[in-house]
Length: 572
Ligand code: HEM
Ligand SMILES: [Cu+2]
Image 1 (tube, rainbow, N blue to C red):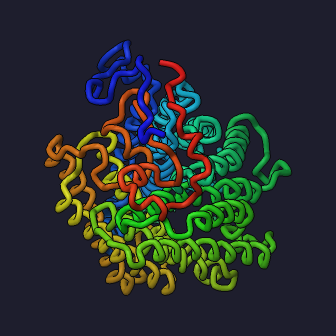
Image 2 (image 1 turned 180 degrees about the horizontal axis):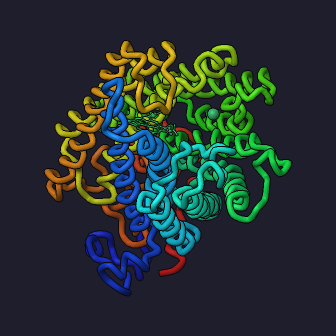
């Protein structure tokens, strides 16, 4: 058998075609608006979501500046409510999610499984445009007379009804969420269809890269969770404008129903946000330890059980409401620690006795694991009702979820350093990258660790001033300093893009990586591949480049014949 699948005669050989776009049609801005190429859509997602991160981060810096003194006057109390609401909303709804399953997944999943594009390229384009318009809709609340939404990113009833929050900023928040919600649902459909139906010959389910596996599970969670939020938002809108009383006691409704609906989406959402980065960290750690993933199947089953459990823990956000079964939701929440622990051990196992190369991407991945571990361990405390009663609505909670979400920021940066060169064709500067990492990592701990103590001392969340507790100032100052360091890390990232602009050509496979996206060119051609290597394990590119190591891979050699087929784009 041949070692490389040769292109059929009608596909140009890889060198001649490199750099040319064989796709006919509009150019420039029209090309961008009409494109259905998953890589260009993914790049649009990347740029938009990173801008959202900068906007959300800007709000955060204002919040931290306000809290640096006990009686700050930087913003009014009303503006403060808008700021923390929109900070949380922008970060969760408009940055992390779209970055994970819109940007990274869109660009990487089809290439990792040897597909020419997503299964439904036009639906994919629609997802992006819904996301962009939804984001603009939500942010436009700032330009209305009453200001942006101000009831927290969770929009609890009855605070969010038309009596307590009359303005149109709240309606724009609901409208923006409906649009981005549909965007996410369509992406979920697309990812499932792509992964189930467009895998290249030889790419069996248990040879799929862990990143793709995690995105499959993420997509299924999206399909289970997001429609519930969408329904809840429509009911909220009806309560506000059509005279229904679904969430209001006055008309016989139940306010706490909103919390059930919101968190039935909201807790799986935590894993919708995190699983893509788990997958990404798994790949980066394996590549930069120059070893296969330790416990490949164990990782997959851990992901599946995390996803299953995550659907049954929503009421751990509602322990203090008094209307949920505490032991059940507590035990279910604690159980999630088991598969998560398996992952942590597998990551350590992957690095164990490997030749570890601490590139920026690897530092970000390890920073992700360490910081997520801090967030996960403090989550175990919160999953215990008596301890949660003590810390509910304090800065302990703010600290817990910022350990988690700042880990995701490190994950996002790891993804950009690792996969960015594949899609742009150029590497980022490693020295600036390492500075960025250390500012981000140290900044994160300086920002969150004092907040745990503040929470135990009783500082409530969502307060703009604390004039009667000047003793909280010192820890708040540390936290604000951490926020400043994080802000500097973001500036270093922007600076790195500027100084590295088209400077360091990446080549096809700068990291000597494992999976199919590293077999094709950087950036890949219009339909991703001119040829594919035989797929005999979950590391086809590595197998191809290191024939001497092939026996170390997973999977058997039984299906070699299947890989003989040339994978060809179905349409053009
Ligand atoms: C520079 C980094 C960040 C800083 C300095 C920061 C700061 C803050 C602060 C001080 C609060 C508490 C506001 C209050 O309760 O009065 C807050 C709330 C929040 N943050 Fe962040 N944050 C950062 C990054 C993130 C990221 C990356 C995410 C999510 C991906 C995020 C999500 C949230 C959410 C959901 C809330 C709760 C908002 C609410 O209470 O309604 N933050 N942030
Ligand atoms: Cu939760």
